[in-house]
Image 1 (tube, rainbow, N blue to C red):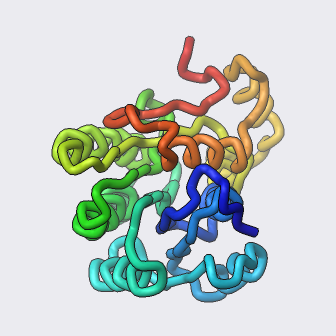
Image 2 (cartoon, rainbow, N blue to C red):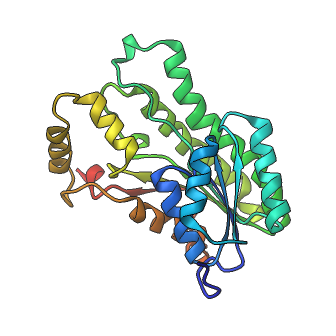
Length: 260
């Protein structure tokens, strides 16, 4: 399943949130581009199923870690180094959408859960990848943000807040790590046809999800939701040497949604 001539040949990547739609699509593409990949997820059953679908014996490994479990996160990164000899790419992709409610109806627990998972989880994975990347002479860190990090949207204040914070973290990390040859970028998807977007649509329009999708499509110049594979293509570019002068930016992939 690997390609020795791929853009990521000889690279080692670690992907958090690896059992979600974007995570799995990115793992598949990274493998096709020649990388060795460590999948990190919190569900052992989902991780096992994802590994079975991807195959790639010898070039694929897995580790169980919740995004907020510092010890497990550090262990997953150590396991990556043990299995493959180092780390060149981090795709910090784990995240949650949370509950859609007006901000004055949210509990502290509901707000904190989204903020902690989406921000502290990204920071923890970055934190433990810095030293291994410096040891390799550089690397690429990619965080999954969202168009929610560029605009507001009613009834999802925790998610909006968390993705704005991810972009701030990315900019700061890029400034700190550039001298070490480590590039740091975020990917900001718009509506993508996957579980998370269906969850948000179901919460915002429980009685007319088809109408919700149609309304969103009307706001997207390309007239449709994106795919997990399209996001994976952007991740692979940012992970590769083709993006050697890209750092500190939020790369939108939204069909033009934020252009208006």
